[in-house]
Image (cartoon, rainbow, N blue to C red; front, side, top):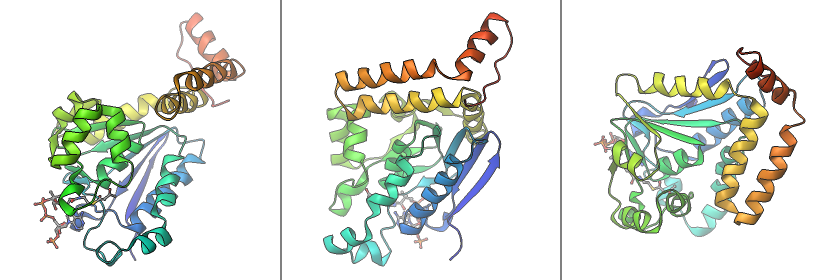
Length: 258
Ligand code: CAA
C-alpha cells in the first residue's frame, strides 16, 4: 500500500501532508495510523519544534472514509476491535506544537483532526463542518466535545444538527480558526506561523499547550494548579535565563530546549 502521508522536514519545522487526493483525503485506519507514526517520530526529534499538519488545496480531509468496508460494514464489535480511538490518541499525545493548515474541506473526522491540533489556520477556500448527521451518526472523534468547547453549546448544536459547511471566515468568527490566509499563499503563510512558534523555547511551548489543554479537560482549580507548577518549573530551564539575558542585552534569544 502506498504511504498516505508525506513528511517534509524544513528544520525547525516539519510538514505532515495527508495524501489521498482521489478521495478528498478521507481518513481510513491507515491514514490515521500513519499520521500518528509520522507525528510521533517528529515529536521525538529535538530539531523539529513545530509540526504543520495539512492536506492539499481541495481538502484537508473529508472525514472518515465512508466507502471502505471498515465503515460500510462496521458493527459496534468490529469498531471496538479496530480501536481507532487509540490511534487518534497517538496524535493527541504529540507534545511539539502543531498547526493545522486547512485548505478546502475539513469535514467530519477532518474537522476533528484539525481540532486536535494546537492552532488552526485556513485558506480562504476552506470549508469546515460536522456532516455526520446526514449519515445517521454523530461525530465520533471528539467533534461534539471540542467544537462545543471552541464555539459554545448553541453554535455547536446548530452545526452538528444541520451538518452544514461553514466558510473559513465563519470558522474564524466562531473561534475555530485563528487566521484566514489568501488561497495563493495559505501553506506558506501557515509555515511562516510555524517558524515563529518554532523559534520559541520548546519546553515553555510544550508546557503552554499542555496548560491550555488543561482549561478544556479539568476544573479551574486543577488548571490553575497545573499552570502554577509549570510556571515554576520553567524557572529551572536554561532557556529562561537565555530569554531574560537576551531581553536585557537587547539581542535575539537562541533557545536550546533545556
Ligand atoms: N469517504 C470516502 N470517499 C470520499 C469521501 C469520504 N469521506 N469524501 C469524498 N470522497 C470521494 C468521493 O466519493 C469521490 O469519489 P469518486 O470520484 O470515486 O466518485 C471523490 O472523493 C471526490 O469527491 P466529490 O466528487 O464528492 O467531490 P466534491 O468536491 O464535489 O465534494 C465533499 C467534496 C463535499 C467533501 C463530498 O465528497 C462529501 O460530502 N464527502 C463526504 C463528507 C462526509 O460526510 N464526511 C463525514 C464522514 S463520517 C466521519 O467523519 C465520522 C467521524 O466522526 C470520524
